[in-house]
Length: 236
Image 1 (tube, rainbow, N blue to C red):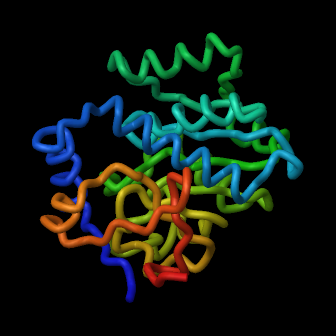
Image 2 (cartoon, rainbow, N blue to C red; image 1 turned 180 degrees about the vertical axis):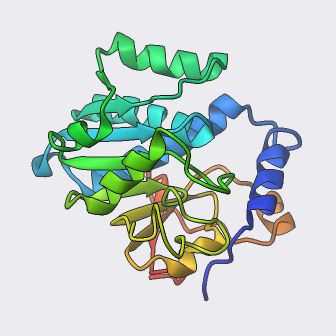
């Protein structure tokens, strides 16, 4: 049986539900999402493959997940660096950035140059709320992700992809296919176009909320905050 997907509208409603009747704060949800991302990176790119991890963060929640993941990766023994060109003035994001600064995690200004001195890239630029065109300064980021030979892990969605329809037909992102994707809470419809290793993360949804939104909670094992599934939404 395949995993069901959540549309962008349903995913946004689910977030609101988790923060209302579910009694979670956005801080908690971001911490749990970022933790699951860090665990996937540890699984697909263990320390012996190279410790340098470049995390590209957008201005919204997806970027916040990336900042949390980078903090966890630092404590696992990696050497993360952060590309975060549009810093939010929101207190939560400022605190997440300061936590990294206190760890002396470097923030870089030139993403294409930073790609040349890393071992693995985390794409936490755009999440399920993305629509429209990729705006500056991110076209150069997407282009670098398209062209790199390094492994890339995308958070919830490959940046520039339409949440419903997948990669753009032409232009920025049309040739972008990351090596790994971690869908947060539940896969989005774009996964039908994704052909590489796919994970689901976010081990916090109650059975009642999953039933209300008509999706399946994966069978998480042991301490893992993620489950690997097949291409698209097919179970392994």
